[in-house]
Amino acid sequence: MPRDFLKGAADEYDVVVIGSGLAGMTSANILGRAGHRVLLLEQHYKLGGLATWFLRPGGHIFDVSLHGFPHGMIKSCRRYWNRDIADRIVQLKNIRFDNPQFSLTTTFNRDDFTRLLTTDFGLQLETVNAFFDTARGMNFYDDQTTTTRQLFDRFFPGRDDVVRLLMEPITYANGSTLEDPAITYGIVFSNFMSKGVFIYEGGTEDLVARMKKELESNGVDIRINCGVDRIHLENGHVAAVETRGRKIRCRAVVSNANLKTTILKMIGPESLDKDYVQRAEDVRLNNSSTQVYMALKEGEEIDESSGDLFFTSTAHEFRTDLLLSRDITSRTFSFYYPRTRPSKKERYAIVSSTNANWSDWADLSEEEYQASKQDLVETTIDALEKYIPGVRQKIDRAEAATPRTFNHYTRHEMGASFGTKFEGLSVSRELPQQVGGMYHAGSVGIIMSGWLGAINYGVIVSNEVDGRLTSESSHV
Ligand SMILES: Cc1cc2nc3c(=O)[nH]c(=O)nc-3n(C[C@H](O)[C@H](O)[C@H](O)COP(=O)(O)OP(=O)(O)OC[C@H]3O[C@@H](n4cnc5c(N)ncnc54)[C@H](O)[C@@H]3O)c2cc1C
Image (cartoon, rainbow, N blue to C red; front, side):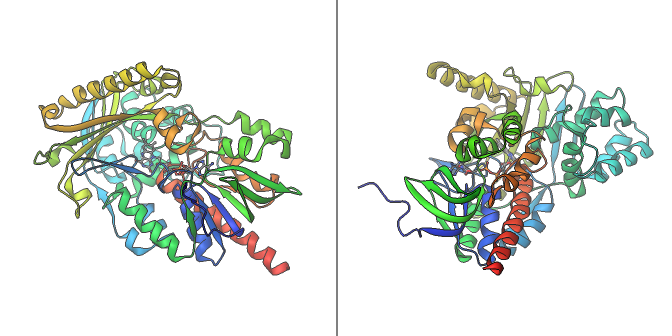
């Protein structure tokens, strides 16, 4: 008999959270902690969404999106998860760049960037300070028409090398480009510059296991393999979600699934204002990624001087289209030393990530697809050989993920790695005005993507849901 993944689930909850990405889990945790009856439904067989990992024979564990996040994660995890999780967040001190315009190593914070920009790049200290202060002063309510390109032109006209240093890591961190609003750059850049780049010691599997434990201790009912097909409304208000053919009633829904899928498929345009539907249709998805995961044979090592995070490029200039092209010029290597997982077998791994377009992978035949993946693996190892000669012989396993892989595991349309472009944020925020009790929390608008952005958006939305449920209860 097939397993009943909803066995023992109640017929009604206060809130159903659809999706267990970092935003979904954080919302569920806060709402559970506040005493609401919460059901967390995840379509995949494990929790975490894009914050995920996978195991391979030989004791190898690969992280998919544990490459770096800002210091703010410590505070968010301490407040909205627990100290156990927050205390495992550690700094990556060795960030490297190598491209035809410059090669350097940095701790990736304001002091060190100021040193580099004034010495290696020969800029005036006043200009550098003015740029940092402007970026740090940016917030969501600021002018949204200035683009990142215009911001750079104002401070560093004609300095493509400076733009590259300042922009390349942020394009990697949230998919934003020079054409996006400057605030999508300024907010994220300043978050990193406050103290540098951090990761979670113990690996993604440890983080997600601790989050699951915390969710359970707060009474959240967690169900995996339970994709939601439909959100049912009554009189303009959420009434139930449908999963595995069963309708579960609820007073509020938080969807952590892709914004467009939530609005246009799970709710459906017929229940929404025409203008809102049009705006949801017009929301552009962010780009996707390819990755190559390489594990070293037992006993083989990588020298720590290789760095933690290494931005490499063979392109002579910084251009967004080159960053996304199938003809790869830019690769970001994450090096995982045994200290990433102190309690596990002593293993070294390298993950290469590159921004990518869905359209370059979507329509390949199975044969072409497999061949392209293999080509991606081979060319990536070739590129790595330049920095770690002989690495090919040390590799035990190497495999690739593509935009199709991310789409397959998370159902994100076009395999979007960072949700939507900027316009998605207001569409996401306005959802409760369209349907009573219906919320969206997940990567949108560039700013609210990445591990920290997703967690913080989960916090914002859960506070709104809590406010609504509490005021409804007090009126009964
Ligand atoms: C290759 C790559 C590298 C990255 N590197 C970094 C990095 O170094 N630092 C960083 O901060 N960020 C990084 N990110 C981005 C970061 O991982 C994401 O922004 C963040 O994890 C997204 O969280 P989320 O809450 O938006 O949900 P997601 O992780 O997108 O999860 C959504 C969840 O909803 C589930 N779902 C979807 N539809 C349904 C349905 N109908 N029913 C039930 N469940 C459903 C999905 O299965 C998934 O679990 C990276 C992303 C990628 C792809």
